[in-house]
Image (tube, rainbow, N blue to C red):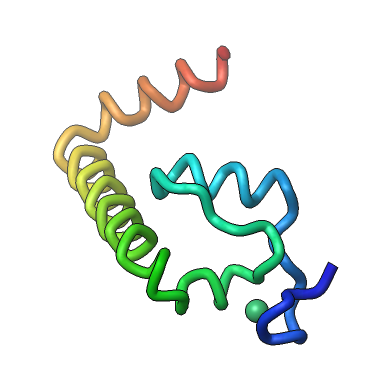
Length: 82
Ligand SMILES: [Zn+2]
């Protein structure tokens, strides 16, 4: 299905919509593409806040891995063991 707003990009799949709704903490529409959802004032703040949090988590994870590489390697090996 194509986005009902821009008529160019594919709308989010049900799975992607559910994941994004969970991540940002509010229900996002299923008939829009990601770009149109981000640009919609109703969802813009929630999505940008989530993106900033996610970026800070990633940076912290990288900092921890650089500061304590052996622990990071141990966690990675543990993750492979499932
Ligand atoms: Zn769109």
